[in-house]
Length: 71
Image (tube, rainbow, N blue to C red; front, side, top):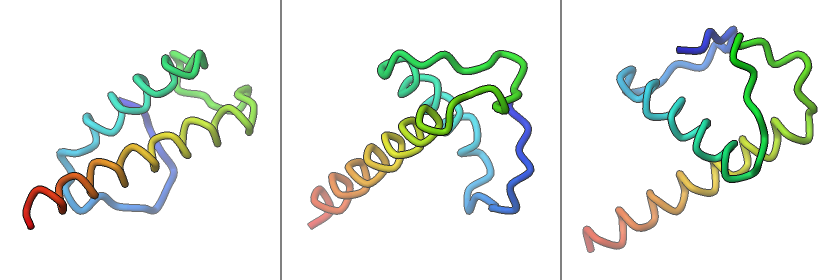
């Protein structure tokens, strides 16, 4: 599991593994290699932003589908 200095806290702490898995899936789809040592200092800002943006889009899509299914 990656270490983070972020002060953000997940509402569901068990979601950490799922979010990490999503990060690796998105990075693979975009053709971006995630550092195995967990140090992101050598990763281009554009690449990190692409991964984060794609994760956000996917999470919003999942939430929209979930809300549409409960109506």
